[in-house]
Length: 320
Image (cartoon, rainbow, N blue to C red; front, side):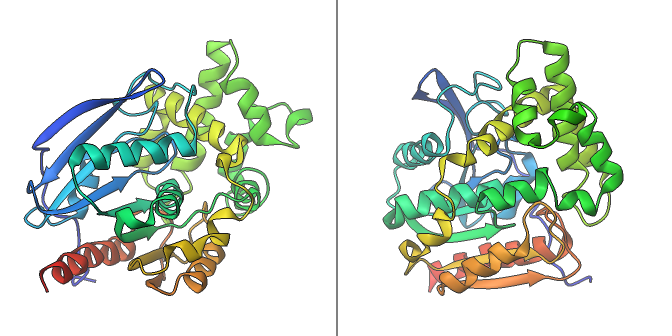
């Protein structure tokens, strides 16, 4: 296990700012690495989680110039937890605004979990702007995937944690839990809203790693984090992420010619491996790694190793 690659050393941004993207939203962004290096953009998961300082460390700072940003309504972006003008296609346009701001013609797009969904949507809308595509924990946001995690599927593997997820919802409303949560997370009762937000958020924090992670559970249980995370994530999934059923797999042909990597944990609970496998079959330009003994999170050792080797490998090819 000692030969597994890990994160690069801690690094501070060389630039930070807020970009006014319209609709009342200001997007927090930061840039790390070497100005003028290989351009890349990092797309965080959730939706609604925001970036962390560890996300900066997935790229060699000597060779990359990486832009990270908090998507609408979360992290350091404002207004906090806002659902107004907050859809997949708003975010796709935000990414393109950021690329123009940076001043590059193409960049590597790196996304995990919901970030992989957004990366696919962006790459299929703007394929000429993507130099490479690195995807972890592939999620194509079909109604089947949403039901698997929030209705019947993962509940069978985590019956103890599932009780906590069910707790805020009366039994008569449990036939559609996403809809039941939506009523509470968008309602006028702040006490009920926070109660629902904590339960929604902790369900994810407790099920995304192969082994329990007290740190992730604590992060997802934080009130400020949970409100944005639960409201925005539920808002997206309640609306099927504004995607047609199966759209991202259907349009995989638009990725033709884009080199890439798909990394997926065998025991990924939120994102069943069958969808990563289907994308692998539909997109022959990408290498595929199904990592044994791994769950969903990028911090799983086997997954992290593949991601670091991928970003290093694409930087090496840039020099050839």
